Amino acid sequence: MNLDGISSIKNLEFDIPNRKLTVFHQGEIEAIEKSVVDLNLGGRKISTEQTDQTVFTEHTHQKKLLWSVLAINFAFFLIEMSTGIISKSMGLVADSLDMLADSFVYGISLFAVGGTIYRKKRIAKWAGYFQIILAIIGFVEVLRRFFGVEKLPDFSTMIIVSILALMANGICLYLLQTSKSKEEAHMKASMIFTSNDVIINLGVIAAGLLVHWLESSTPDLVIGTIVFVLVVQGAFRILKVSK
Image (cartoon, rainbow, N blue to C red):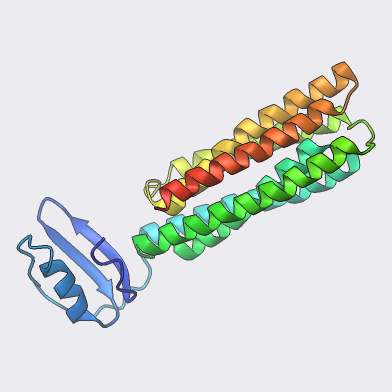
């Protein structure tokens, strides 16, 4: 944390048993050394040397993982948005916007890979605020449909698409949990979003069954509202992580 303000630091490798820290950086060696010495833990510079290493194994793994879940989420944003509009389902439209928000989170998380703790937390904070904006837009649309006259949603489309989305989110959550860096702020943010999606998918499936059973669009609007409440809840959890 004491090194957070030094933008030239590219990577930190900690060898706790041997009390050794390796800092990969560009310039500002005096500032780095001072920050370590100021901790009063008996820190001293062991050596300094040039290196051509610019790619770090865990960073490469993180990027591949985040690109994978970004592609899955953006694909399902397109699928759910189009099928939601065609089937008149607010639940699918709401979930598609949540998928878009996830895609945004994974995208900005890619910029955080290899950054300092400060940078990662700042990006997590942006993700939280973005979720809140999407939720407000969603609430407005739910109210418009509630007070307007809408056709009954196609329950079969709601259920089939949501089952496929549930499978996709399960894969994304598994991939994120396999990451060695899952405790970092930007990775925690990604897992929170994906966990919310699994719950949302189950809710849309239940709403589809109730739409068919009751022959009413109310369950679809209710699940749409719940989706955006979960989005806001997730956003505040993200903001808490980013402190």
